[in-house]
Image: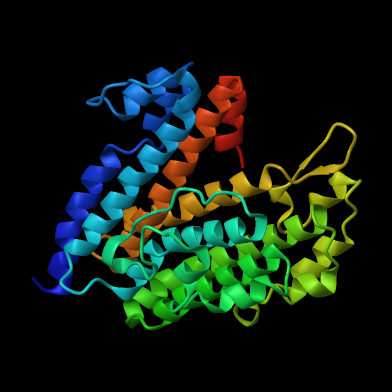
Length: 326
């Protein structure tokens, strides 16, 4: 089967998966549920429920994300030689593993559960020694950096390297695929950088110069001007943010101050809509498969938000406003 045939075959399989995904209209059925047991039965109708309600948030989130991870890996097995870009997307799970290992080394707390991406991973599982797990892997350099820098800077370096590898794989695509994915990926990078800069200013009080030095693929995204504007806008006057290009990311408190809490979700929603267009409008391409991966990431995030909202008693209207508003 040639590559075009593989994409055509995969396109049909992925549409079948998307028809059963809890996105758009199907997510509305979950929003109407009022307890975690009903959410579990809706997501896993063929599986029994034999755990307490207090354990369900973690179980639902882990189980559903594992289900999606398995679907990612199955798509790669269709190719005799999986496209490097898709393998790199899958390695996002390994990046999360590395962060868990680094945090455990840094804090001394027990290691969180890790994701197994099989033969596509570069870290051998299970892990008995945290430091040895990263030695002789491409992530070994982070052990030394962790001794010299704050954890958030080490995690930034890890993320920056990951996105740079994604960028290099996109640039290596043929002309048609490049014309589809390059603009989409640059849009994503710009939004992630603005979100990153907003967090560093608001939560960590990091000065502008240091933030400008820590933008993902700084030379490619060209966001220095926008970051400078972000730093000029007053945190206690939310109304002044409305005319900024990225002002839609933040809300205002009743006291008039900015509220950055919605920003993360608003970026996620904007990226979902972006990659949804790729999936449905660019059939039989690698870009469509990439879009599928990214849409499923958003679905998992919806499930997380719903389950955690139900657990702490957030009303349906508040959850709906968070995940649907832009």
